[in-house]
Image (cartoon, rainbow, N blue to C red; front, side):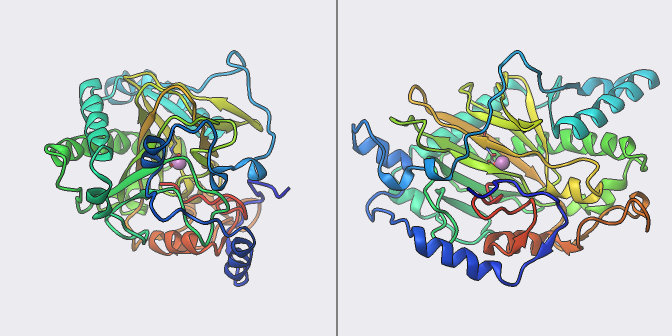
Length: 380
Ligand code: OGA
Ligand code: NI
């Protein structure tokens, strides 16, 4: 079995891998039934106690250890201390943030301004969207990673070996804001939700810059964050009759700087920490934050993007909303000059724009820990 996550992490572009990816997909060549467009429609159209074989992910999953709940826990960051703490509290919390980013690559943010009622309204609005007739959702079916609104089901015939047990809607929320015009109020709620999440990220990026020994505005400037791409993505994981065989989203890394994530109270997210999978239960008033690839690149690997995946269950539909907060599409991203030298800290990542990164990732030609042969980090 191939490794899911490949390190070392020096990023390079492989001229052969796209033909390799297509050769591999020809071998597996999954077939999508013509009438079923979403997992939701599939589940609602049958009472079968087994899943169609093209959702069977077991040949591609490694039997990796799962941590027991008591083993360790995701760090918690109280954002009010970053904003209005005493200088001593601020330096303590920046230290905690630095540890969270380097030891875990993820943390829970508490006391932020994305209110529980706004989050609930956002989840309810996405639910209404997924409840629209299949025909209406089809209007938003995009195929390209740069389509500003894209609705679909986890499936890319040229790359994926088995279909994912999830449907999704992805919209660009910044610098331009795009959303479907239905359901009613969706757009208004999505705008507020994205804006408040972005405000949290702006605070975190300042603190993260300081934690790297850089000036407060460093990461935002280097990523041209004012024009940064913010992607609002909702994942819909219907109940699954054979949850141990299917996967919601396989192990991957997110591609932005940071991802903020909430869910509807149903668990399923796992993160990889110390070579074990940890279940992440996200309380209603918490924002779960993940380090993504471009913070890894900027920090020259000091902070590493975290591998994570979404499992499914047979009891309740799970919904999650992830916001990927990335650099501007046309900014060349590279390790911060202040963090590299010609001796022990050589730059570990090649330079490219965020747009190039995203496009390469889609073709399977991005060869590094960011793109393994089996599972692609293109989920957000
Ligand atoms: C994603 C993702 C995890 C989840 O959308 O990139 O990793 O819990 N989602 O749904
Ligand atoms: Ni993800």
